[in-house]
Length: 326
Ligand SMILES: CC(C)(COP(=O)(O)OP(=O)(O)OC[C@H]1O[C@@H](n2cnc3c(N)ncnc32)[C@H](O)[C@@H]1OP(=O)(O)O)[C@@H](O)C(=O)NCCC(=O)NCCS
Image 1 (cartoon, rainbow, N blue to C red):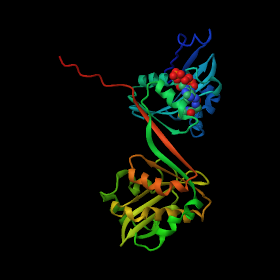
Image 2: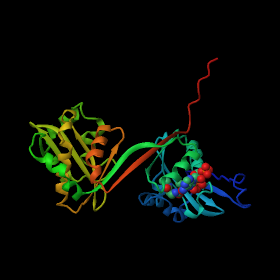
Image 3: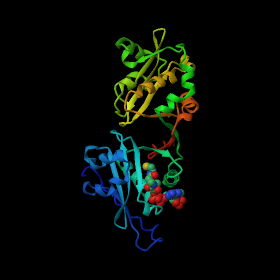
Image 4: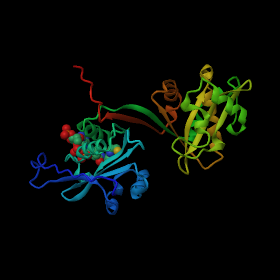
């Protein structure tokens, strides 16, 4: 932990009104203290917390309340330290609403500011149960109100295959012929890279070998659609766990988007899923893909077991000093 500056903040004045001997201390946690804190973040971050040394841009600040571990904030900075992400913030249930969470957030900002970080963002899933606390806590620490960044859909594959609309549009091949993505030749792939109708982040080359988060591609669940020999759409699936597949990226030429090509690609992926051990489909649609969001709300929502709204907030930590003209 030598690379890190320990910051110790004692907040006595505000809290002394609650009892006569209350003390919150926040600082980076040491290797030997990880055991007390590892349950205080999401399971996916726990292995990283245990091996903090292997992640030079990961920072774990703990809060101690009356000398006992009480809360944790986990932060990840970009390698150039310009931006950072608040990965999680947690306070033990029995110690909530004692300003520990908001203190941790404020200290996280001071800590990142000292590293030279200029802005921080965070994402969380909206839920009636947990959102009011995190939203109040962020607001108390001076964060702007969060806005919708993504809608996350979760469905069982059987729901998709049973849907009436699926059967209706499958009749006829007017919208093109669907084949396995593996049928795409090197020449076709290279030609797609040059097409200007494809947004950069949706290009097949970005998703064909693995997900942007490193998730393994499932080649048997990836499809392409051709119309008169020209590629007009594709769908890529990635593995999330032994049961769950993410329908990560599906895109159709803007001129063909009215022809339900997208839904046909999904149908093929869902049909093929029945030949595998996967049964759950997850899909996230970013708010900037408005047409896709409308499409999913209309056709996918009725088939979903769960729809989650992913919220995001962004806070500027350092404003460039304004120029002063004399
Ligand atoms: C979110 C969390 C960290 C807040 O910690 P905390 O120590 O209770 O927060 P604070 O005491 O600093 O409270 C800050 C503000 O939020 C309010 N608040 C806290 N919990 C609240 C709740 N359940 N409902 C409504 N307001 C709440 C406080 O009253 C306070 O506002 P005030 O000063 O106007 O009264 C804590 O509730 C928690 O660990 N939740 C579970 C984990 C989680 O959901 N994390 C977020 C995703 S990473």
